[in-house]
Length: 380
Image (cartoon, rainbow, N blue to C red; front, top):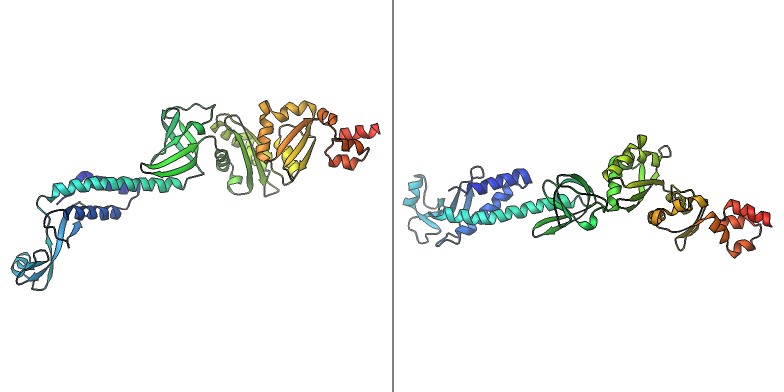
C-alpha cells in the first residue's frame, strides 16, 4: 500500500530543508503505522511494518511458522498455503506473510498523517532551538517582517524572533523589510517552538560589532575591556593592546575613521568614545572622561571612589549634557567619580592641605593641582 503523498513530501522536505535524518522520520512513521494496525480487530501481535523509503509503499508483515495442521492462525500457516507462495517452503520454515487489512490504507494514512505531521513539527522546532541556542550572546542579521503593538518581529530565515519595546533604541525607527542586526539575548524552548529574544540596546551588541569590524579585536591582539552604553545617544568602550606596536584606539578607529564610522552608522549615529584602558585606576578614570582634559585624579581603592579635578572651562565637557559623560565614565570604570573644577577644588581644599603648609609631597598625594600647590607655596 502507499503512504499519503502529502506526508511523504513533508518527510522529504523536512529531511532536505530542515536537516532531519530521513531514517529518523521513517522510523517514526513505521512506529505510527504499526500502532494503528494493532488497533484493528484480530491484529497479529508479532506484525512489523516494511516501509519502502523511496516510494512510500508499505506492508504489514507477520512471521508465521509452516505447520502441517494450524492451531494458532496468528502464528502459524499450513504447508499447503505456504507452498502456494513458494513451492520450496517446507514444514518448520518461517515465512513472512502480508497481513495488511483491506481497509487499512485510508485509516492508517490518516492516523499516520496526523501523528507524523505533529512529530515533524516537533523535530523542526527542536532543530531551530538547537541552532539558535548556540547563537546566544552573538549578533544575528534578519529582516523586519512585521510590527505589532510596538514589538518588532524579525525574520531570521528558519525562525522568527522578537525585538520587544524594552530592547529597542528609543531614537530608532523600524520599517518592514528593513535589514537589521540584533544581539541574541535569550533563546527559550516553548511548546510553540523556539522563542528568540533580540536586543538593540544590550552592551553586547556594541562589543560584537567591534569584534566584527576590528580584526585586531577578533584576533585577540586588542582586548575590549569594558563597554558602557546609553543606547542611541552615546557609548564608551575601553580597549587595551597586548602588542606595544599596535595602537588599541587607532585600531578601533580604523583608517580615516572607517571602522568606528561603520558601527556608528549601524547604530544610527550613536556617538562612540574609544578610550585606553590602564591598570592604574587614576589614569583609567582620566582616560574615561575623554574628551575632557583632567588635571588630577585621587582614588580611594577601598570604597572605589575617586575625585577628579578639571580646568574650569572643561567642567561642563567633563560632566556632559545631563551628566552623560560622567555617568558613562563611571559605568565604564566601575568607579564612583566626583568631578570638580579647578576653582572649586581650590575653594574646597581640605584642612589637612592647609595644615600641610608648603609640604609639596603631601599636597601632591592629596591630588592638589600643581598650580594650586605653587600658589600655596607663594602664600607661605
